[in-house]
Amino acid sequence: MEKLLEILNHLHPDVDFAEVEDLYDEGVLDSLDMVRLVTEIGQAFDISIPAEELIPENFQNVDTIWALIERLDEE
Image 1: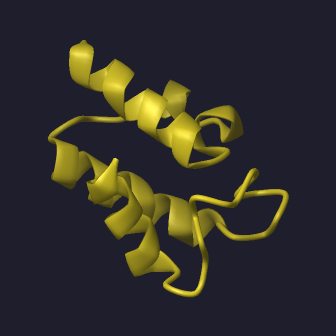
Image 2: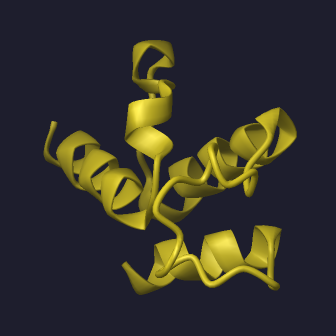
């Protein structure tokens, strides 16, 4: 989880991602951030995030992103 927080903090150092409940509704992430986030997660965790997993529910907050990473890592 620490590596994920590092990636997110690199995107927006001014945001406390541990406290954000919904990255979209709170306007933290935009589409460009998503592209960067997916790319960096893929490289950092050596996983590929399929297009069908690129839904807001999987990127709502740190916990949902981490759950996605863990699930994809097990596959």
